Image 1 (cartoon, rainbow, N blue to C red):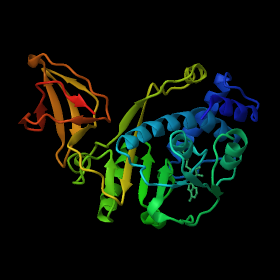
Image 2: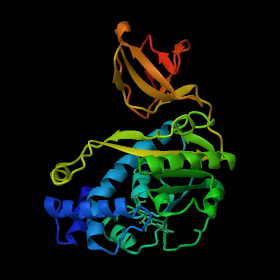
Image 3: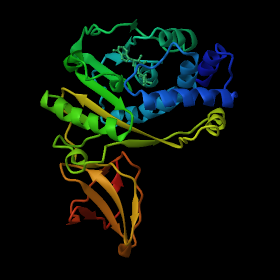
Image 4: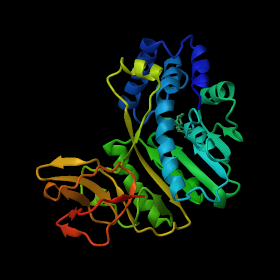
Amino acid sequence: MTEDSIAKALAHHNLTLMDSKALAKCVLALSDFFIHKPNDATPWNESWAQVAYLSYFLPLNFTRLKGIIEEADKRSFFAGLEDVIDFGAGLATASLALSEKHSFKFHLVERASEPHHIIEKYFPQFKATEWQRTFSAPRITNAKKTLAVFSYSLTELSDLPDWAYQCEALMLVEPSTQQDGRKLMELRHKLLDKGFHVWAPCTHEGPCPLLTQSKTDWCHDRVHFDAPEWFLKMEEQLPMKNRTLTMSYLLLRKTAPLKIQAARVVGDRLKEKGKDRQMICRGPDREFLAWMHKFKLEQEIPRGVLITMPEEIQKVSNELRVQSEIEVL
Ligand SMILES: C[S@@+](CC[C@H](N)C(=O)[O-])C[C@H]1O[C@@H](n2cnc3c(N)ncnc32)[C@H](O)[C@@H]1O
């Protein structure tokens, strides 16, 4: 994804990347729309919605997806896959991010016509095999080599469509809100029952401790956003800041992953009296690594990464007491 493409697409609306106030006004309008009408279709026919997606949601979602793709690559998640069905593709966000590192055949399904025209005209570096405007099931020619991607589109559907269950692999990305995040964790349970295996973020296939042992937690990852200057200027006009971005996601395949003896860090560092804690996930228990201040050991591990668990670690209630530096994978 290039800034140049975004700038050219904005010029169609008589705007430049430096029109911070006008861009921010459009971003606020679409952001309000997503908050107040979370189940409604993105209003692509509106100029303000196109401007907001190009200047804000596209760069942010693209960065989130790159973070997920990086995690996927660490586990060779895409091995053997050839076709991508990007459902509810919008401005091809997920396909653009995937195409930076992988050469798939991209089939984009998007009911609105405007995103297709924008991508074809202003992002010529991205080559889609096919765009499909449909409400019905996409054509799957080789289910065993197909990855179905739902990037911020499940939220506009009542459920994962039936055709997706035929595909070898699924990449599901949802807004990191308590409601959408917990819905995704419930869907994980259903997909495991249907024979899928979770490759990430989960390190196990037991019940999700954030769902079963808490009424409020939801699993989400965090990435840093290195914002360009024009974005920072626009952001000055907005109430929300985006130095880090969160997202909830699931990567699943019908093929089982290689077993790993690792845990995933699923929480930020919590500073408490006498200790620091970070939530980890390695099984059905809700557990925390704990650095007791009296041991004079300090470490902050980025949320979302895999770690090696020390072979012997003292467990007190739901706390695993760290006595030597934890290895990040
Ligand atoms: C919030 S946007 C996400 C766009 C993009 N995937 C991203 O990650 O930035 C959701 C998209 O799903 C599309 N959509 C929703 N339901 C659909 C359906 N039944 N068939 C095709 N597209 C659909 C909407 O038009 C919209 O472009």
